[in-house]
Length: 290
Image 1 (cartoon, rainbow, N blue to C red):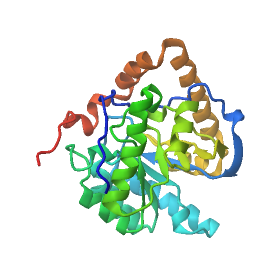
Image 2 (image 1 turned 90 degrees about the horizontal axis):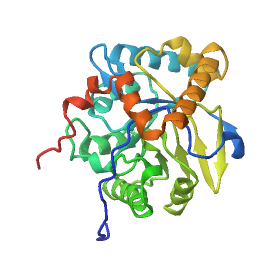
Image 3 (image 1 turned 60 degrees about the vertical axis):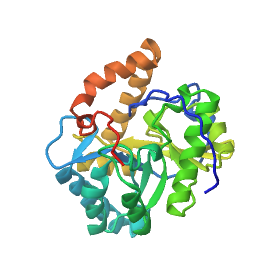
């Protein structure tokens, strides 16, 4: 790895929320193909209170549902649309064995600056084992900062440093990034292209992949602790009441965000999602001792 001095003024960590893009309409992007993705964060051994934590039992139910849908469609296991954000250790300890049991592939979006440095998150040994097992490992930024709030210099660090570290440690090509908190805009899109990314994954449940400025923009369904098999099936098929309900909820969320502002909405979201009851909150962002 080449020696490089990285600047980082520690922009505020971005929470995972269902937030629309800043100033870019889905209809302004060119649709290229249809493929639907699911996003998980924490996997819990017990019934969780945090909205974006999913119990191990429920995750196994989802995996069985995905395997069944894949078998019906005679599709390859690698096309199963599971993604993980952040790099939480529960993804390695609890989710990975389930993925292997059902022969389901997944994309792990890792916050590179937290690997081996933050309690409750994976080490480079964990991430390397995931990559060697044939799973895709991609970027979730360097420090989980909201990309749309970063200065140009901070944005460059978030995109380039995370990509460089992952490629250097794992010996892989990193071509995709998921936007922390789903925050993105035109400036972020162009910066991703300049940093060498080809795909940007966001938190909006679009049914089709969009392409703009040489970047594919891919929407994802955010899985919560109450998501059941019927919702998973409907989301992946792209039809049914759960799809309509989720999209209406996303539009309502976007409207509230515009009305009260991004930062105010984030405070409301933390309370409603019970972020303080997440597994992550137990560690309070502590760094591991080396």
